Length: 164
Picture (cartoon, one colour):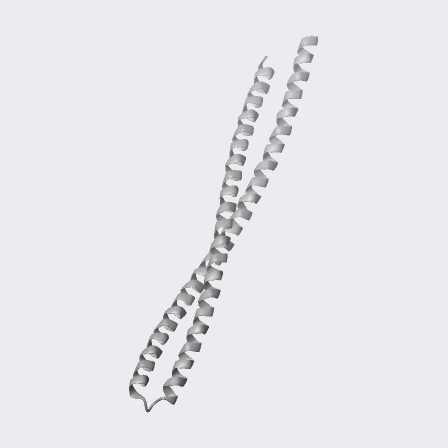
């Protein structure tokens, strides 16, 4: 009778381990899914920032062309002081706009780099979680095999006792 009780205890313990392993596996799968979703979101943010960066670079080029044009006009029309003053004001505005666009571009590049670093971090995190999940799945399969083996031993033992 004590051998039967020890087998039942062993089966109960294995069942509990199996349930805990299953719960941990499900938790890790949910976490992997969450991180994959977050990774996709970060990739979308990278694409958006890249688009903004391209747009700002085009705007900077346009503004620099405007600055060059204004400088050329200012150099050729020195005898017209009023026109020269207007061009100087326009040049100053264009330079300020170019500086602002350049600042925006640098900010966008910084955000892009930071997002890229974060995306790499999340990718490594996802890989680590997937590895942990795989280990838990292996442990779960191992426990399932042990559980089936103990069930078979119990069945054989019960038949043996029944034959006695």
